[in-house]
Image 1 (cartoon, rainbow, N blue to C red):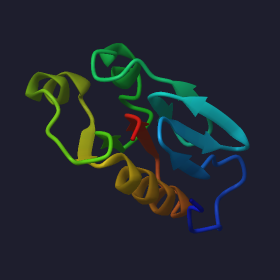
Image 2: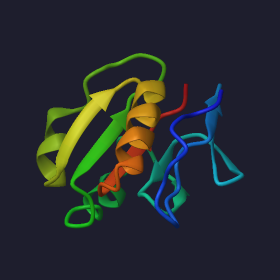
Image 3: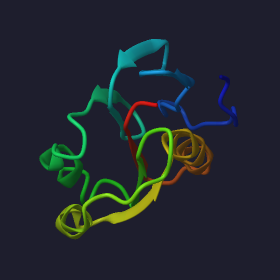
Image 4: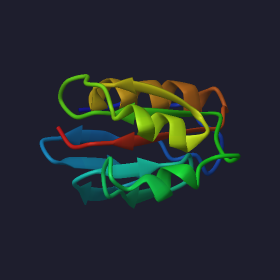
Length: 115
């Protein structure tokens, strides 16, 4: 599935596509949960991998947390522990929102659970 928009700052890494169990960015495909922080895509250990998300504090202004195929609420203590603004939504919506916000030049990240 193509992702829009197409105007990004040099070095920015948007989500190019996604499907059942995978995400694609910059020509790289990763299976399972992923984290994009604006310039790189990394495997992510899911909701129990709090240290990876906490490391974003001070580097990003907002984290879009994709909860899989449907929106659901993450553990409340996870949100409290991160120290950054978190917007929770379905992963497809989080990927699109991340791309739009990234195209605006903002400091954003998205952590996406697979569909």
